[in-house]
Length: 368
Image 1: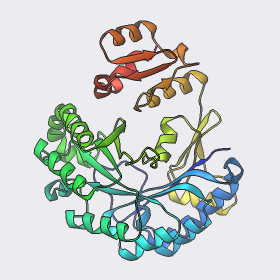
Image 2: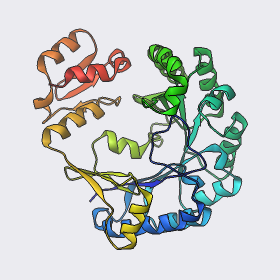
Image 3: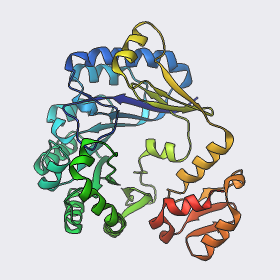
């Protein structure tokens, strides 16, 4: 039985131009009905879950935009988990909301900061301003949250290296336990690429240098670069708690997980499926007592092995390669070792620090 649960809450106050997640704008009158559908889907899939979970992640959308009583009812009905993360946009985090989340057992919040620079927040069409972020952070701290993550984006149209340095400095001044730093990915054909296409092309050429700034600044500040885009504070004592994102770590380690909600993905026992992204179809199927329409994707052994390599090599811990030899290119491995990009040590494989800076390109070469 799986010990990892993802719950998708798609509602947002508005849709940012660069976003390609499954989202629904507004619809406050439908939040309660959607939560009803989520709980019906949970009941249909409950036997796939362990009695107690290791991780649960409420993502979106903006989960904290969900109508308060519906969100509370959902959190009360979900199974217990050691790590419970809720994504939040800063403008939705009030003192009351922070206290409610903590009272309901949430112990980790992922705050969608993206940037502290007003001109870049405007480009991203974000509502929150720098003071909104700080206020949200202090509301969470005052409510007792001692595991807060910031999402930051780099490669934003109009961004300069000094803007990125300043964003990292503002984040470090607050001192969250975790930082996720992602390069901006704008899907071709979206209104965002039409509006900023030329500048996006220029930023693409700067991504490598931005990545180096992120890694250097955060590791110099004592954060562990434990995954390609993710950093966590290291414990003060050897017996300190692990501040890595446990739910995402389950993905990177190839663990089974169950996803609930529109567009949610599940991977269990060699099969992957994705729920319909259409809200009316999802709700109506579950009202009728049926599972929602799903796209099924069987995962043959070689696909699972390739994913294990691609995801596992994103981490700073060596990958155990027992049983993965069929998908590794031996000649490429020898060449990459000579170049100082890969470290093979008996039954384990890892990218060197230099190899991690090149990331996916090195991993692609390794795969036969």
